[in-house]
Length: 145
Length: 113
Ligand SMILES: Nc1ncnc2c1ncn2[C@@H]1O[C@H](COP(=O)(O)OP(=O)(O)OP(=O)(O)O)[C@@H](O)[C@H]1O
Ligand SMILES: [Mg+2]
Image (cartoon, rainbow over all chains, first blue to last red; front, side, top):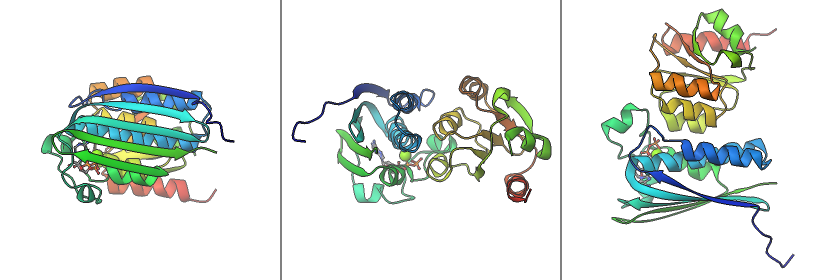
């Protein structure tokens, strides 16, 4: 009560845009960290989904990104700040099925236009901000018991 | 029913991850769009797909799938097998198309007894 409780854990990761061979490495690390911290399985899987979708979007559409993972009492926070083209129309991008993925990305099975919807559906709180020509900033919060 | 029983019943070729064939299968999902599979599949599922690229391993691992089955005799990429072996995820191949394979596995998983 009153006193803010310290974070149990925090770590930052980097994602390189365009590199599909290592795509998924950051979300895999986040998942194993949360598991080791004893976070319940269903929460860990939610965090894995949201971080994976954000990671793939950085690899697909941005130059690079920093991912901040913070685990506090009752909460897992994942923040993804990228440098890249940004999103001109966030409402449109959030629509299921909307995608600007090119042929190369689609051939690997991406580009269904569902990634941002998954992020929204699997996080308890989701914020997205973007500036065209600068980059995109996602904030996802998942509550833990 | 575990993965091994399904391998035997529908005649799958096991490409890697043999050590995990004892894992219980809780269901299945068929799809080639990775974020569709991310959003709709569950842990313990068998994932039926024609995608052979290494990105399928990250999806199966993050979602804790019981295994990946490639349809139509598709050959997995070498990096896919390498990564799947490291993650202990069985990658299997069926000569059947997705519709038929999904139907057979669905029947196995839902038949009583
Ligand atoms: N970090 C980002 N930077 C720039 N544009 C982005 C970013 N993330 C998403 N977008 C834009 O929003 C669209 C929708 O993203 P979303 O993740 O929902 O679907 P997708 O990536 O196209 O396909 P899927 O995620 O289903 O494989 C993208 O096609 C892209 O135009
Ligand atoms: Mg996406």
